[in-house]
Image (spheres, rainbow over the protein chains, first blue to last red):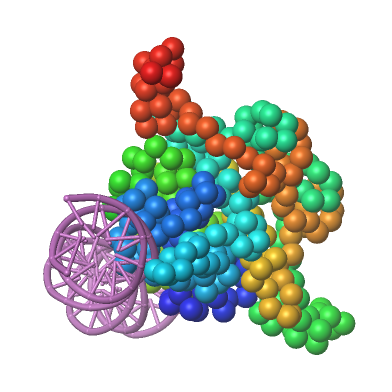
Length: 165
Length: 165
DNA sequence: CGCTATAGTTCTATTTTAGAACTGTCAATC
DNA sequence: GATTGACAGTTCTAAAATAGAACTATAGCG
């Protein structure tokens, strides 16, 4: 399967994976959320090859996750900042970090601690249900085809009344 | 950078990315959370090559995300089920799906809807602070080096009292 | 015996990535 | 006015990963 094909899949996970589903994109986003913005800064802290970095930045810009804006004329220099679409990736990044904190730390403990400035405490991200506010477990969730499912509308629409047939 | 190097990074994101930071691992996990368990079932719904599927399953088993258990003797047949460590990836999967729901759907709408069986409603995942219960925004979070940071303990320990020098 | 199902492995061709060096613009320095 | 350094890339070759298809092995069924 090509990367382009992923974008076309009738699945929100596949489509998101098409945007950020490789290690370098995720690592670049980590740097973005740590307030890094410049090509050489990314390159220095990640050890990514310059070629791939240029490639991934282009891709993230193309998908609207980053915006490339000049911060200096003559010579033209650009930096990459998160758009709102990019900022919305924060729960993904934090849940990835949190899983690592729980399952991948060595005896020395967590490499980083996150302070919630609003309440002043070190915190963990917690995923809750938007409707009832309770934490969500996988086994408590049932998945239904939505309006954008492949053929969901068509087949349902045609067959609803005669579904027993 | 090699995949192995990622595991060694003093960063919970990098270490998690070493486990699930490629498109196929994430797609396989999607299938796992949709209750798929068998080699051919994965292969059929993902279109992944058999070679890569075998490889990724081995990797996920090696990291303790999946467990390979026989469900039939003679001939030996195995299926792959999520361990607790694997189930703990649910917030990651759901936040990826949610971002796609918000930013990558076409005019037809969401491919899938998630029902929270506990409260009976379609829901979105929401990330809140474990301490104060409020939704967390990237700009409200400050990151501190933790005990497992590279040289964090050593340099802090030696220099604390003479940090101005 | 031939057919199907399952869970892989093996093969070659193509694509991606790694690693290093190179380009071009400008500012500051010698 | 040549030299150095910062920055944001591009270009090159070699190594690694992936795609796509075929093949293996075991067993049940007709």
